[in-house]
Image (cartoon, rainbow, N blue to C red; front, side, top):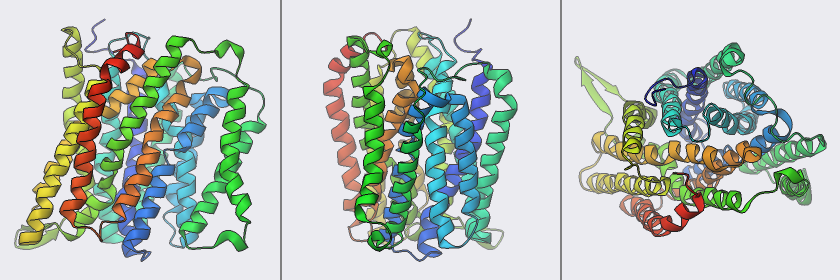
Length: 483
């Protein structure tokens, strides 16, 4: 079988399902910051905090959803539950009252927890352990993610900014419904019985019920506080804190009572350590990368000349359109990267995963060097050319292609079978920390010189890349032959 072609048919089903799911997510994200600032009249600081809260927690719940899929539901059922919750969340955003806004975000956060880690794990299950097509398969899957992300800001931002905010959010909901319908239509025929049952079945169902209840209570309390409510008069502080603690207790109980057959070997422990190390370095990447929906969108809105003159008329490019640049470049470049990794692998010159990560961090830093120059130009001449943002997103995309699909593939190669989706949830923990750090960072956008603002992610990206290169020999030893 040629390793260039003949990927499993199920890959292309999951490609299109993830495409529509990401259409819905990125369509909503393209509007979120501007919607809070311009419609809800939140301050930039509060909007950035809510944005960071959302983008952080949306990647925390995959840890919960991955665990429940591994032990209780199986990945395939979890995907259906997650897709349904997310569709409800997107449609809730189409209603103006503020309670719908925060309620929608809670539904989206919980739905993503069940959907995100499990669809990636199902992709990994399509390939045998040492199948050389795996990295290429994940790069193709990643192209599906970004195909949806490319079109959604164009459609949702145009509707949201030009027609009405809630039309844009409604369009995101339609995308999620299409993805869920496609999955229900084709999953049995194209995926067979893969991942239908939990890998290590458990019967103590009170544990996931308690964990989900606690997480929802935590999200509700967080939403109330984000909306300026002092919840002390509504719910005692100890109850609010207990909601978060119960999640941790539930996880600890579950691990303490895992079946004896799942005892890890020394090799498995070292491979798991590699996953955690790569998660740590991913935090530096994603906290800077997530500026796309916050500070870079604000830069596009206020400091970029978005006027295009055609046929004697002026058209102003919606600020949200710039978020289509990253997925556009990924769709354009992902096939090249997929073929490149295979070609280098055939000749024995393919970089190891840690080296790919370090290259990705370096390219991200170069993208912010472009933004330093753009900020300097704005200070001297006023609104800058749109090409500055195009250049920054181009380098960010090159970095992402060296890190994100490679990381997804690495988790499926290194994680023991009984912890497949759970470790995928751990992988997404980097985005949890990054969401909070990036949101806090973006909250200072109006108070810091913008040249200085963009120097910070430049320095951290380069520093993280250098540290990772120093650690690579030890990491490769712990990977035990996994490339």
